[in-house]
Image (cartoon, rainbow, N blue to C red):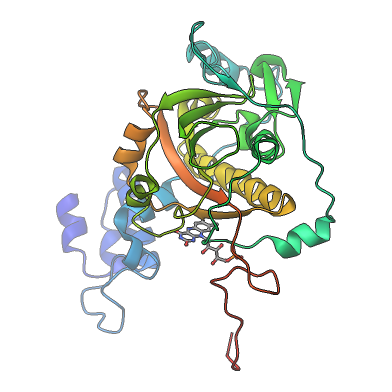
Length: 331
Ligand SMILES: Cc1cc2nc3c(=O)[nH]c(=O)nc-3n(C[C@H](O)[C@H](O)[C@H](O)COP(=O)(O)O)c2cc1C
């Protein structure tokens, strides 16, 4: 059968496959229609896969195609006993937040939420990526407010078999809020520089490592210079098992990445509302970030990076590195 697929020169040859080989035939025809297979004498058709798969490669294409049309279960326990049976077989629900040892130390942060007296319209218009910071300290209450509104639960919700879930300012597919935050402090008033895990439930910083120079963080983010001058940085991670327990389909990985996008938008907009600036990147050295954050579970991995500080602005309030277009251009 494989021999026949290999030697098929045109779609009609695939008809010779026996009925038992229908899946192979359909797969081959799909590949043909997507442009990954071409007929032997078709010189008009491109011999490389269509963009973007040509650039992103087989791995991305395979992920993209295999997560399409994933089944979705609506949360009614009686109607979908099979799903809940399998959920039970998956074992205990992973906790909603990282557990901590009884003797773990923590720096409690103030629960003073700074007023953000700025209109929502202004926040929308003011949020920009700021890649230059002026090395001024960020105030403790501003810092605390930013972590609280980005990573902290604002409410909890009773969810039947799913237990009690966190609700944060950002939406989260499945509401399992798998995102955790590791904060690298350089210049926040009243806090010792170092690496910490933000404990969202206790609203405090659990020490993870000693002070690191900004150059170390710059290395981790491929010297993009966005940590230079930042008052603090955050590496987000995902404790993926928290989400996989509820959503065992590989499509959940896509949702997980979308979740961190929501979170980082709240971070950037809250920073803007507080008169701070934020920069983001997904380009970092994963292994070294894992070492910095002392991640020791295979189900937890870094997902994003945010730098924050007092931004260097132009006279009109735009980031110092921003240039407005001065010539006509086509879209
Ligand atoms: C998912 C994501 C990844 C990004 N990665 C980088 C990055 O690696 N380096 C960088 O300088 N900016 C990065 N940015 C910021 C974008 O370059 C920036 O949002 C874009 O230039 C538009 O500018 P604005 O944020 O001021 O609207 C990223 C933004 C997002 C949402």
